[in-house]
Image (cartoon, rainbow, N blue to C red):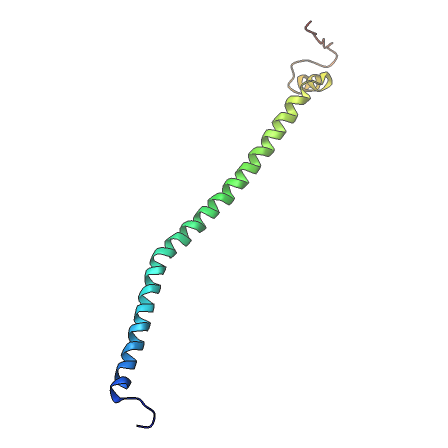
Length: 101
């Protein structure tokens, strides 16, 4: 026995490695059990966030278009154009603009 190891130590060592790897595997399994649902939930939330951001951008564009159309209603020529388009007035009719004092 020049190496200094006893025969009893050689039989215990593989069991110690097995227990170490087994405990590591159990810890990993528990970690994955709790983390995987969180990862799926995060992916779902990110997807929802992207969809809402696109919807928000579309709504903001619609609002700016509506505000632009509202501001155009201050132009008498545009109002006359709309009246002609909707057939509220006919060609040749005189359009009067009323001014409130």
